[in-house]
Length: 326
Image (cartoon, one colour):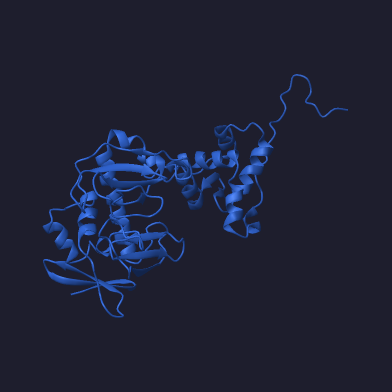
């Protein structure tokens, strides 16, 4: 006896074995989730599903099992089914017509494609036409350790933290893929775009929302009581500013420090002061103007700083939220 098909007849096609369970319930921590995607086949599945997503057409999300397996290039149906099963529930959704990527899977692919988790280059541009907001000298654009920064060609800069080269005026995290070859090819455009994005993010933080995850943020005044910036960044606080705002997301811990004026530059009267300075769009100039305004620490218990603008002395209170008083 044999189970082989009789001579001259075609055997029935064997149905591919698709995943039948959701392993998400076994995961107890974010570390478990990251361990799941530490596999080339699973990353390939996510990238293939992500590439099928068209922003303007949400009808092509779903990919049938066999089509997805062939697109990934895995000949072994059982092996492919196992890896796909590990992604179900958290990164991939199983639908009647096939499989579709979920938001966490999309975010993971975006992170990989952006170069945020890859090796970074180290480069410095030639001087640009942008000016240092401290001394007026030309500014170079540098990319170091995953950060784009403006660097003054003459003075010691505004930031003096351990990992920053002398002359640093700003330090903004940017994935390598978003930098590309612009340090050499278009440094001024890169400087403008990155600082425009920083200003947008700072404003969102200033309004109490994390620009990364949408969570609530906590802001506080960071005052240097022993401030001395007479010869460059203060050795105590690492900046030339006697006070900055430190903001942190309560959900994902995204945050950093920023001039208070940058975080409220979309509100009156700072908005009008920017316009009076000839700044009508967000970019390096908007950052430089707000960072260059002299900040005064308010004496007493109120967590606040003040600026002298055309509208008069304006107080910015930072006590979890950020408020403007005139």
